[in-house]
Image (cartoon, rainbow, N blue to C red):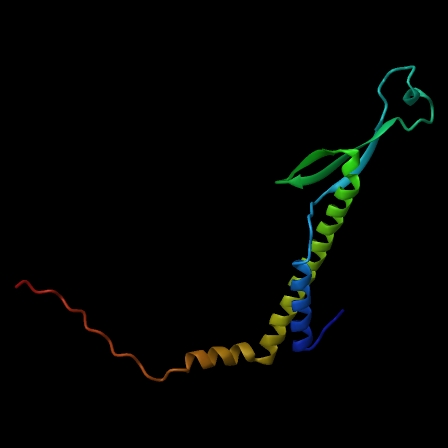
Length: 140
């Protein structure tokens, strides 16, 4: 959607703000299922073409520049996928909200409403308040 008028931008900004408040649990990262072999020569995982044991699920994401991995139980995989999807939805909405807000700010500047509001604030009161003299206490 590419709203161009001030009203369209304001309407889209309100829609995006409302969408942000409708979220559920979220978490960043990538969910990975891994298969591994146990190393026992008689196990099925040692056979050629076997996928191995698994999957064992882990969630990875960066925290302060370091990769953090968390093991996810198999019964929580679908919930974790939904949380990751919600996080991605949140990020997309937040990104669009910033873009729309920036366009809205630019549109208001172009329209001159910001400049006229500032001028109205500055010129609103023509009356100057009298200066108060500084009284110094005198010893009695």
